[in-house]
Length: 197
Image 1 (cartoon, rainbow, N blue to C red):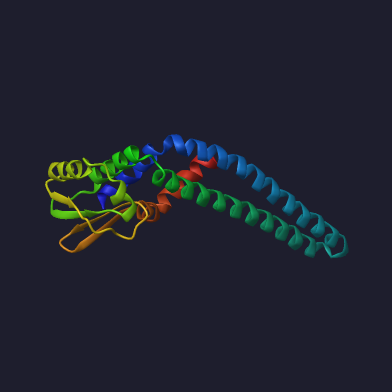
Image 2: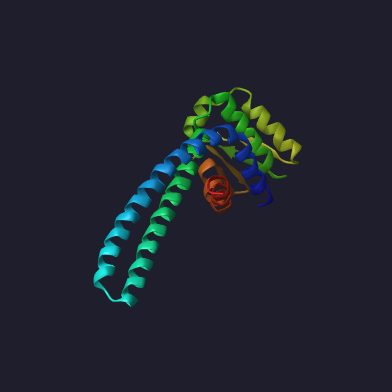
């Protein structure tokens, strides 16, 4: 869907301030994790060095390679944990926005997702209970601007946040978790370049 790239861009823009704090925290955590990984790799190296003295010259190269491999695996694991943590915290930040900001965010997401068709927008039970009085009207206006028609369903969907669009019985999952899941590869690449370059 061409709107997914726009949704991802909007997510990144809307959470950039929060993401900076998360990235700073993640960098601190990364330093600790990487230092721990280096310490652990150092232990492996010391053990390997002890064995190298006993082994023949050809076997010493194997032991060193093993030590390097373990060190690299530990660092890679630490990076993956950090990226997953940043993604999880970013999703939680969006879900934890104050009501007014959260529903403004949903409207921005809707602008990129609404199709030129008649349909319904379905929210979670939590979001239905805290939905601002003018949200239905604003959602309907956005749908009209996109050439369609949308009404807010009174039936909740089993999602944590975001919404589900239903057009002619076909559901389009625009929940926050679905957007993060669908675009995880792009987000991981972006975080890799931001955190580790």
